[in-house]
Length: 208
Image (tube, rainbow, N blue to C red; front, side):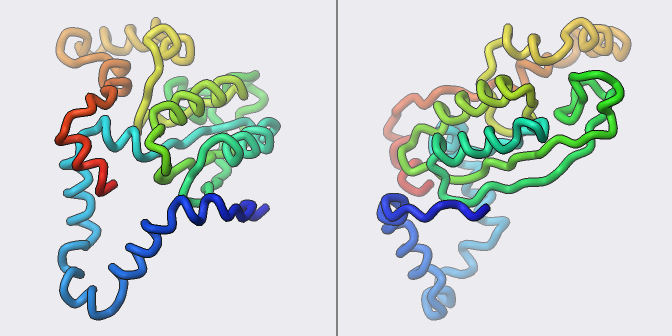
């Protein structure tokens, strides 16, 4: 179903949209086009403090059981003021890869069923990306889903190991001599810092 049209969202992004139109004008592109290639944009994004990116953008892949997908999507459209549409992709579950988001947490007979990967990607106009990400994590758990850990993660350590089997993970670390050599997956995946409200972050945030 198409997303509902809301004038309030149009006006909240009006300066940003006008800027995109101006930047894409043919004569402007002759001067600035080389500055805004995909590789250059990614390099600029990497220069931004991670906390600023987390506050300005929501980037999440939530794997939701199909029986709960409609309720989850309805909640996202109401609760998260994204600048972009949602992305949906059916994913087959598995019952032998317990640390993947597509792992079936139900009975083994469900191994050939599907989850719906709900891609929630976009810029938020109010700068509350961290709060929206935390709400998505809680709602994903409420609907018996999992999310991919490649982007921003704000789980507490207790909640993280409630979702993933810590004892099996520690056994793998012991078996591959990784326990004392590398940080844990929780330390690597859930290390997003809160915004510090420094002058540098304030300037960078103007361009995101």
